[in-house]
Image (cartoon, rainbow over all chains, first blue to last red; front, top):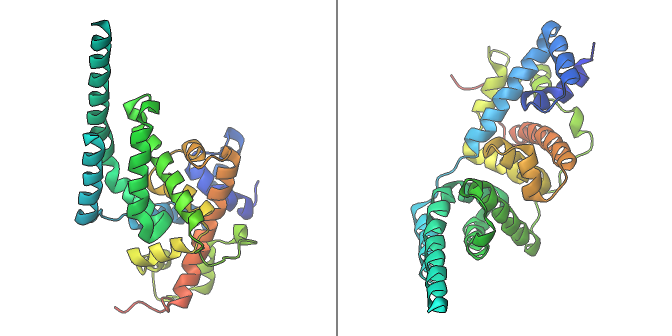
Length: 77
Length: 202
């Protein structure tokens, strides 16, 4: 069975569906017996959501207005 | 007569293309701006303006409307790269060696900064506001930051990110891996430096 270090190295790729059939099976076998790596997996999922949520940012209305004006100008050419 | 007809047809096509431009681009503006903010900070608006000009010029190259989000993103990433290269300001140097061994999960379990917490790992993340995360992302070198944002924030596939960043897929996968680990480690270091590792006030 693969070690925790190997399992952890593959976890994000596992979540992203980027591992092959053999690696997937190896990660799943490890997860079935290792509670700590299950915690790692849950946390990796949490971190992905955390990154996506916190990178969000509103487009300020004045910036939007200036960008829309550029589109108007380009269309008017 | 024939020539006039051809010219009218061409003008009609050009008009249609211009109308199409607005329809394709306007819904993407919030996302493009957000990505640009994360890539070039205060230059974001200028980068999106550059992107609009380039996209308009190259509109003929867009084959299907459905490809517009990825196509615009590719142009924007290029514009951000140009702005980045023109400015000398680089993110703070971060040490990237050994980062592949770093696990924020294990670090938190080992250091146990909030010993009375039942949900140590979530408590840690909850202490970060949006500005804190932005500050952490800013410390990552651009070639790690861009793939992370494209894949984990904008939801593109790694192979789409590879096309946008003009790098082989293997390189992008390696950068994603290191980028994630760097992000984890920089979160920890930011928390340490900003006194965020104390028991939450209840």
